[in-house]
Length: 179
Length: 189
Image (cartoon, each protein chain N blue to C red):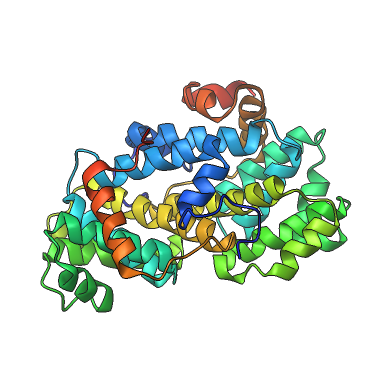
């Protein structure tokens, strides 16, 4: 049961978005720019950062939906997304993404946890200032989305098929308001 | 020294916002709706929620600037802001705001920390669903902003006069518009 009277039948953050469209609009736009905007790393890699941070925050809805979105960007490769969640260092991803995930993990704990050597490491693996900026902001943004969903106790479906469909739409159509 | 090359002379979140205007636009819009838009919570009360969460997250820039904006909206009552940060339960604020600050504090620890009892207490003190929603989202928003500001190691001025002048500007113009004000505006303050 959600803590407040959110519209029924809508999963997770979409019920809170429907409840308060004024705040939903910029929150959707932020996700669109950060996860699907024209930048690097790829959308699949950025969705993996989102899923990774959501898993650390133990937000099941955000983790399951962004895990599925990442997988759909990566032509259905759930195994890779799950390997990253378990341990980015041993997952078959680029060293640059590993370094960006390390920064994201520190941001999740608290901004001050990010050290000069974390940044230096990411730079040595080829990360640009913009990529470092976006990794920090994606991690920070999911510390918001995750708390929003769980702080309202929004409805969290358990059916994996539902998340798979959701992830496909997120990867294909994005986050800007539809309809 | 910030971790990346940010425009100089812009403290706190304003450096990264100038660095990346595409993300600054929705961030400012969200802050304007939540902290300044039509609401049954006063702007001063909402800025107090932002300040308490930023203090809990130990973000110096955010708690100082939002504390200054809160004080500005509360008739310049800086003592009240200090009191609320130190011990909101004993501060001279409404019982409803005290209950909402508990929800905000729990949200900052982690969304699942918010209990039905916390929400029930707020309801008993007269809080509406929308006020509870906005409290959770303001707290969540500052868990983002605080991490954004400190995760990039942005700098924060020491002079309280800077924050008072900037607060007056934000209180008058709002977050989106104040972003466009010249960086040196505080010098005149």
